[in-house]
Image (tube, rainbow, N blue to C red):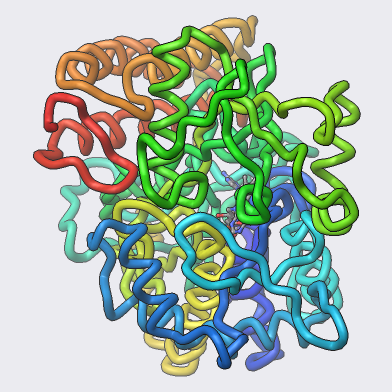
Length: 523
Ligand SMILES: Cc1cc2nc3c(=O)[nH]c(=O)nc-3n(C[C@H](O)[C@H](O)[C@H](O)COP(=O)(O)OP(=O)(O)OC[C@H]3O[C@@H](n4cnc5c(N)ncnc54)[C@H](O)[C@@H]3O)c2cc1C
């Protein structure tokens, strides 16, 4: 057993900024960050467009950013949370710069981009690789902090709470988190890391669908293990589909064509060159993501085409190359010249607006368990996230959660009594799975089902059918889980099955279409 003051699960913007903050203020605290792949592998690393923050006070105001966020969220956001995040934004952004992150400037002034749903230019960015630059700077700062230890390839299987005590009835108002069971993938041993405070910062769950812009780590693990420990999870019906991922014949992670490209003037066209966005929204290409994604989905259904085109041919080439070098290169690698050809794009699962319920300090419904970032329902996004608000959310909530954690560590009023009754991880009687083919078969079935039945446009019949299929897959996974020695792939499958159930059940409970959620029977 390893003991820490603070256990952080995840090394994206949320986990790293939280850990750095505590480390700066409490150099004596022992902080362990576990992460299931390379340190930098995260949704954060792939963020392109940038971070939404009010910096140009001559043209922009907090109120405009608040209004844009509320409009995108279809009014389902918590206004007091939106206000807090927007108003804290500039301070947290300054800290990010102080930690060594570089943002694009011209003549000493920040260059500000515009994305769908924003009424002003307010996106600070580093070319089209903003996330990679943020991840680099944060990892460097964390690695240089004496009291932060980062453990890559440490896969968290489950939280340690009273739900592991055999025969214990759970009093949902009184569950305590004591750390986590973690599989060290190098030694293949399960470690128990106990901590006074645990932070879940495990990001999204894009791989519950067939096509997603998310990297392979995004399997909703944190949300699933919090739900299993009876923590509150909500708003899972609001999964945002990004309108413009680069079309590919191969399923899996799709390359994103940032919204900022449309912000700079790219137009959507059918394969035959006909524009169509005017039919759907007066803001056309700059309408919010749910509207643009549904419009593309609808046009693809009408025409039977596998993609629509993004037309950059009239854009300023020099400016494009300066702002989007990575996107330009990726297109060339795929044999597409954005200045001669339409870029083939499709909507893909992108951002989970719901998740683990937290308060303004990132506290979950489980004692001593915090959650920050894409794995949460913090109240910021409501029914749909405004573009580039998520990196900001990670920073603001990372800060608040760190401040509350420090307060709790100072008080030092922790009770580890129940921990004694929690058993060690037991693999007795279990066997290695002979074939991983069963895991990949069930994962594919789940992704197919979610993509066909619980996608951009849902219906009552499709959701009922999805729930039946989910139950069938869930039963098969339970059997595998009972008798097999644990592997990350099997555990991820169990988590994805949990995530699918949360999305379907919370979709069925909806009586009205809101933001990213659309059921054609509710029109
Ligand atoms: C292609 C793309 C472009 C985007 N562009 C933007 C943008 O321009 N602006 C913006 O604001 N947002 C953007 N987003 C969204 C944004 O990147 C994410 O919402 C944000 O980075 C999430 O940060 P996070 O720290 O919460 O999670 P992540 O950055 O996803 O980090 C999650 C961490 O948890 C770890 N983890 C997960 N499960 C386990 C487990 N079981 N055990 C141990 N570790 C685990 C992962 O390995 C990873 O380190 C984009 C997302 C994508 C995919």
